[in-house]
Amino acid sequence: QVQLVESGGGLVQPGGSLTLSCVASGFSLSWYTVRWFRQSPGKQRELVAYSTDTGRDTIFADSVKGRFTISRDNDKNTLYLEMNNLQSEDTAVYFCNGGPGDSWGQGTQVNVSS
Image (cartoon, rainbow, N blue to C red; front, side, top):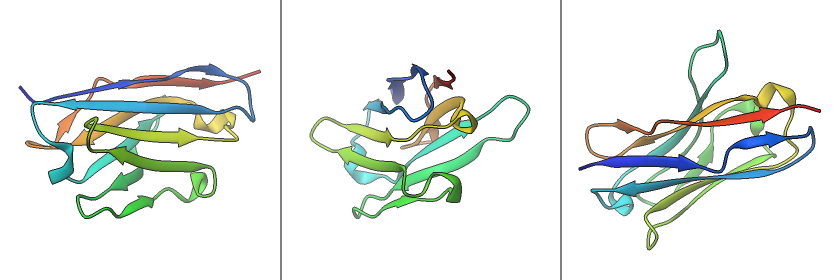
């Protein structure tokens, strides 16, 4: 069964850091492009970053360039999103996406607040 499980979200103060993880099961991450999306209340889901099967890691959202880094560990079948200098506008549910059938995880909540 294909599954993506995100973790690592939480409450952090502005300027703080978090690293999100997305563990894939039921398929090999190394064969697929996988992505991080986020969705804030009242807003559309937006693409944050993606990592291709050929090793191309790209931060897509202009608002997080220079602060977020996407990476993967194919041996652990895990995708990561390192988030630094977090701001209130980064508050959202973060989702992992990809693999067979373009699967989605359940999301992990990130709250940036003082």
